[in-house]
Amino acid sequence: MEYFALIYSLVDDYLERRAALRDKHLSLAKEANSRGELILAGAFSGPADRALLIFRVKDKAVIEEFIRKDPYVNNGLVTRWEIRPWSVVIGT
Image (tube, rainbow, N blue to C red; front, top):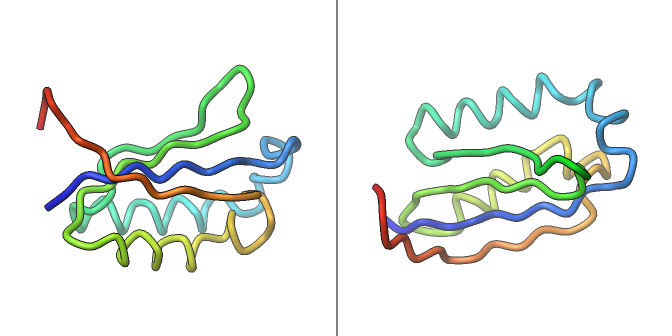
């Protein structure tokens, strides 16, 4: 199992637009968390211009499938994303 960071870049009015999609997005994230794939997730604040989601999976295809299903992506709240392998040195 490897760690990956999924970094979302968000639209300027993300906080205003997310309300209508938040329940579906959180449901998707909670399902991934319950499977042990998504470890931590949240938006940066001051400003809320990016979000960071930490996954622990065997293959980044799992993350790509998450992105394909994410209503934030499908409805234009995410302008771009990046999946980066993350080398964890301290912690589990």
